[in-house]
Image 1: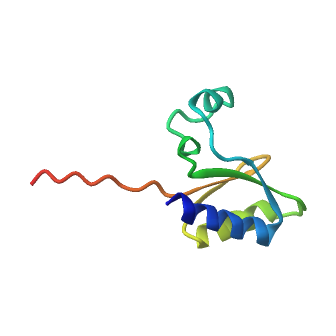
Image 2 (image 1 turned 30 degrees about the vertical axis):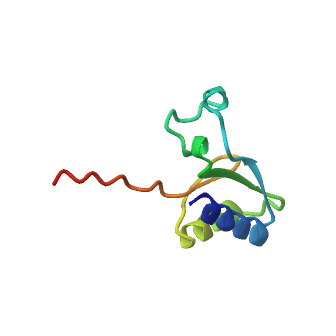
Image 3 (image 1 turned 90 degrees about the horizontal axis):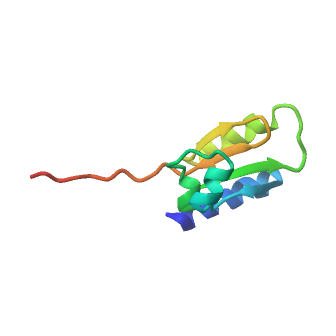
Length: 94
């Protein structure tokens, strides 16, 4: 799953000339940056992207393209948060 996610991040970075400003976080770093306690940054399945060329609408364009790749994207004030959809855990009670 991480390999597929990394490939999609590379596609976004290549198309939009982005830098990854945060990817894998330890629980300590996640807490230090006020990340959600269950952030998938801690699993390597989330990145924060910043484009080199911050033109009007660029963050929304990156988020749209991330969603087209099957990712979750949220535009923040200073970056675009992109993450894989965590796999569902199926419990068989039968």
